[in-house]
Picture 1 (cartoon, rainbow, N blue to C red):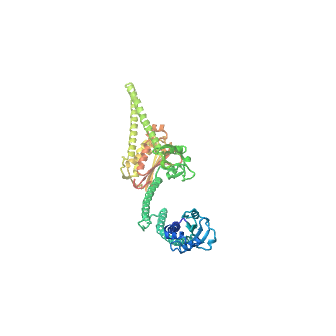
Picture 2 (cartoon, helix red, strand yellow; picture 1 turned 30 degrees about the horizontal axis):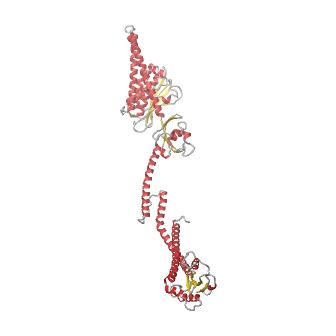
Picture 3 (cartoon, helix red, strand yellow; picture 1 turned 180 degrees about the vertical axis):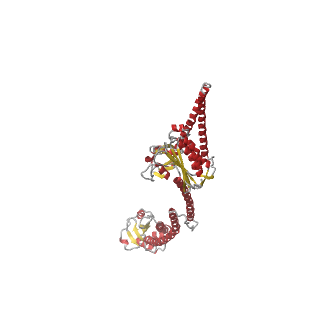
Length: 595
């Protein structure tokens, strides 16, 4: 009930009025009592100390006076000064000066009563004036010793303070009435004041609730220029600034979410207790498992073997730990670093898939080793035969010298072919080898290759057949490069088919593509080696390849040329011994789709 600001203001105003009227009432009552006390004693002092005629009348006895007490009573009754206050509330007594016995009184009934010896009366019995006042007493009294006609008397004035009590009652009644009306007025004013104060506060509350719900468009009207008005204006400015800040934060969050969602590196964020608070799809794909937020997957289940969570949290703010995680056929590089250490942040793990880099590095090492080996072998042969010729100059038969020189020449040609093939691949890799595109007859190119290798095939007793579909269209491409690929494929078929083998060359059209197939019944390629057959320097049987004079780069160059024409070169699966190589090219040439 009293949580409402309305009721609090009403209660405060009520307590204020009650407290104020209580203080004022107490002050008035005390003032009235004090006033009447001082007025009583001042008047008594004035009568009995300053009015000398009156005092002399009290002390002067007449001749043949038989009852001084009655005479004193008559004088007191006839006194016209300030003694009686209408004679209603102040009684006088004429007492015996030694025994305090009542001899005469303004009240005939009280004359028969014995008086209580008060402090003032006791003082008068000792012959002194009794003027002592007692605020807490229920009466007021003074006692004056009087000697008349040789007798000692005491004039005792006694007031019951009834007038003061009546006046206090009236004051209390008046104060209660004033308090009632004051309470009514204060309640009305408090409601009015609270309404004035609470209405803008309620608007502020409504505005704060809307801001809490995300509605920043509502603007609170500034109805005054006081402190509440200033607060309202400040609130509007705060809401506007908060909206701008939240928009900036939302934009940054959207950018980060987009970055995390589409970045190729995996990112997983953990709290200090190891709970997952963020994981992007790349991380789930690399680790091969789902990573729910706040679920059963935590840091220990993912990266405990790399580095304990406590160890990562102790890393300096600008430092990090590295680790490598082998997952299936992947190699993952991990960077583990703490974030926001000042605010007791957690750990961020960045996952980078370095599988291709490792493969590339392995291929690079293998490539360098192969190149070194391929060049060292002919160089060794050339040096050996040349040293033999030098050491045995003039001693060798002419036919042996001729044979040695032939070996040197063949090895030099082999080195030249290796260097030329390497230069060709280097130009392809650097993008400096441009295709010379022009329309040409695909069927004629196939037939020219057939005619070119026919004599070489016959030296090995191979049977070579050619079949081309009719009406094969001309294609757009680099004829010299494509013929180079055809020659390489057919030459491999001749080299790797035992003498007396069979080689079939065919060509045709399939939609917007043309194709050529070279099939032989030679040694073929095992299934395990087929995925790598187009890698540089890769050979199935290295010894036999060297015997046939191969460099291990022919099929790599062929694939580069076909890829640049947006075509494909594949090994066709078929039953039986041998190998079938298929080449497909776009009729309209590169830049018009893919095969």
